[in-house]
Length: 557
Image (cartoon, rainbow, N blue to C red; front, top):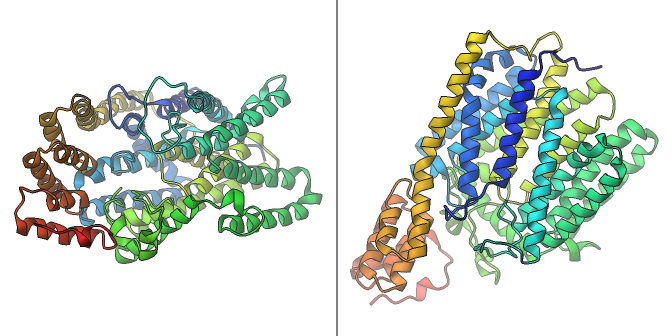
């Protein structure tokens, strides 16, 4: 069945281009000359402005989606997610600033999750079969830029000096694993994009070789795993429509490769030397800690982006005893992160959105009854993201594109199931004009809400660059307060023997976040604190980090 499209598609074209253009900017955005948190802050700012800009129009058109066949399946879990996020902010007990903006470096507060939902709905509303090419073009451009920068960094050619515990091949995404996985995710949409050109097969081979080269230079195996996973999804759909005779053999191959991949990841089988790494075992530590945390906080979790304050308390003896034991502020699994942030119900609701994407893809394929390169390449890319997020932290860029892919698949699918409804019609001109004015105002308000975070982080960078302790103290006590900033400033003041000010910062950090273990540790070692205060701080450190190997033997004078 062919999917009908309304001839008045120009507004859809404009909005889809705007959304994808914002996605390209979000992926590339970084401001090392302005912010200390120079990757997450500009990305979250652009994400929030984009979502807020589209919010008035989406609110006005929710009723349209509600009346569609299967529309309620989309609206109910999404609405419940937003409601539950608000309840988490109220009842979890985590610092409100952190739940609004998120933790430094991650910024997975309600602003981010709210924005993701709006991007999701905007994609459903404004992507149809005709403008999927905008997604392909945006991914191709983004992947090319990210890849070129990553390769330059891998050869030491970078004008910025990044602070990183990795190999510094971070491009504009912040981590070699993110770069590797993004390049893998973008491969199939990119080959679909170049299909329109004369020498498409030549370009597709070049894209494959370049993608493999970039992944190799990142020294991250995630990219190879992701491109293999997405490739199998892509080939499976190809076999279903083009080579049904060999489909049974391909399915057998899929099961065999899955078993080999799982056994290799666990350190067994012929691929273990490629797939098994210390980082895999380390993720096991993170997952066990997350699971213990969730069992103790099943309803509202520990608060949005607050896994870091609770990780040490819930890790087990095995994790603490590892020679490679490390601190983390993410469970390195997005479903565990959702459950840790907001309880089991939040994770279940997000699983519902994942299942909805698969459901609409299947319905769409039943409608099309053919191999559609654009749709299947987007679905393969979405699958690659889901596979990556099973073993990696959530990133703002990944979250944006995941919602674009998911929303566009649902958007095309719901049009296929609602031919009689003219979903792409637009309302009366006066209403459209009113919406346009509201959209601009909403975008400006979003920027104003982000300004405190931008300015505080800007001054924080200035205080570090100038070693201005007074400015540092002022910054950490400014809205929005940050546990990481308190910890860094307090430690630097202590190291420079400014014990009075270090103690002040440590006390304020605990007032801001009662689970800030670094604040208690700074009090415990501060000679100006009273014996009783230091002793109490030691007890709190061991409560928040029960398997700490150094603190139990520390003698308080």
